[in-house]
Image (cartoon, rainbow, N blue to C red; front, side, top):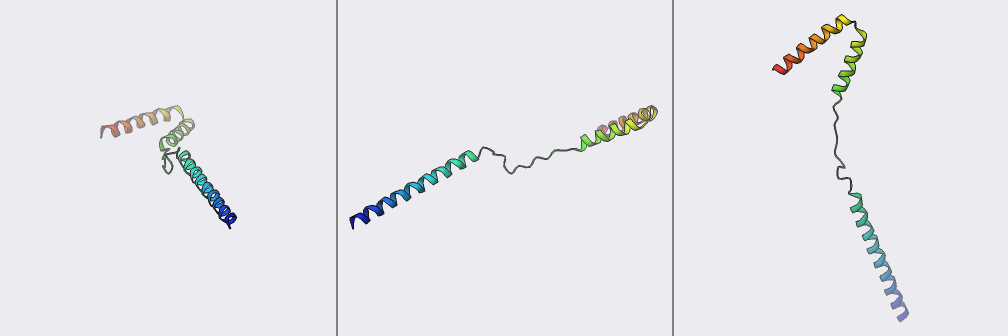
Length: 85
């Protein structure tokens, strides 16, 4: 009878040790996993200016020098009017 009692205590100690080792490993992994604090943050990059510049470069490559000159003048007027308001 003492044998079963000792064996039961041994099994209980082993299960307790395994439980606490597993718990400790989980805590350590959670702490190490929190390095990326920006998880769930959405970064928005505005691409309007980039594509507008590409459009302007293509358009300027297709038109002649006189039209390019007038286009630059009109753009300057629009920019001046925009910043004036």
